[in-house]
Length: 465
Image (cartoon, rainbow, N blue to C red; front, side, top):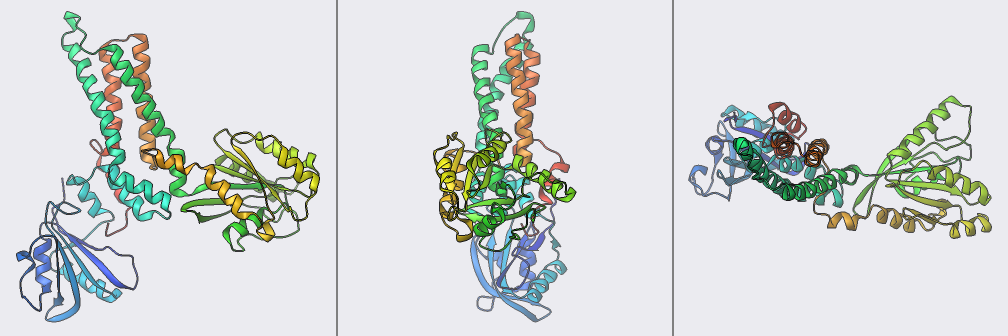
């Protein structure tokens, strides 16, 4: 049941600023605002004003003027929440914000819960659940790539894709279930060939959406980049150069970095999450050994692996280190061999790395980290390694962990439909698996769901949104 109370909250970030916005939503929003608002020129109440208009006036309490404000008025159903909305733009003083909020509560409003404005927009049919979740992603987006994905989802791109899938499945479900009503006549309404073709298309699309989560999650939270290599090859120096600050300790002493150092930097509109790992070598030091184990763990989690090698070492030693890392990375990972210290390295080693045979997911770049030489070339390699152009061309990229889990379940259900068609099982079993797939897809958009799921989603929103 939708809560009919009128809610209010400060919708701008906490703290002092030039302007703050206080939002009021509900059936009594305009009435409550009128109790505390005065127009110095017209004297008209807000209730008499047209929708989508701005009004200058003051907020008063017991004949005391709290602040001069600008009020934006939106009428149901043409508002963000689908309800009457008042947005009060006041001066950014924390004292003024709290006074206005208190006055609104004293006159009949209540403080909004986290995400309650967006939850009401969902419950009032202004957006589906996947779009509502994208609102939080838009607010939290810290780079251009994450912002673009969130905006696409908020505009309904993902919802349209899921809706098209459901419409196609619903048609065949109806046909299969119609057969059950005429089971004694042995009538077949659903063309099994057409159903197989459709099921294969849906399976391919669900798999594509499910598999896109790895990239989508990386873009949303930062592309994970593991900086690995032996001790004293320049890993920490490279991290400091990329971050443009002394984040990691640099020393000639072997084993200085004993734990994973993590930081995020925005490069060409994409966030990269760097992990400077402990130097990989044989050691009896238990703490250093634990750091090396964590290095291998981060290596497995990385989308991009920067293997730093010291060109002062003989090529056979460098080659063995490269081969060791090659054996530990998966086909979907990009390996960039960072040949460091080229300003002082062995010419033979550099030449051998230049001509070594590389696979499609491998690159070699030659730098001097301390002097920041060729650093831009390395950055370009990293940017191209995630194939953002292809990502931008892809209509939908899944970034939400909840959607990913549901898509996995839906994909498993549609695979059972395909297996059932192969085994020529009866329509009632086919219909059951199709209905299960439909149920999962409906969970994404919120057409089916529970109060517990909604509560979990919206509690993570900021108050005021």
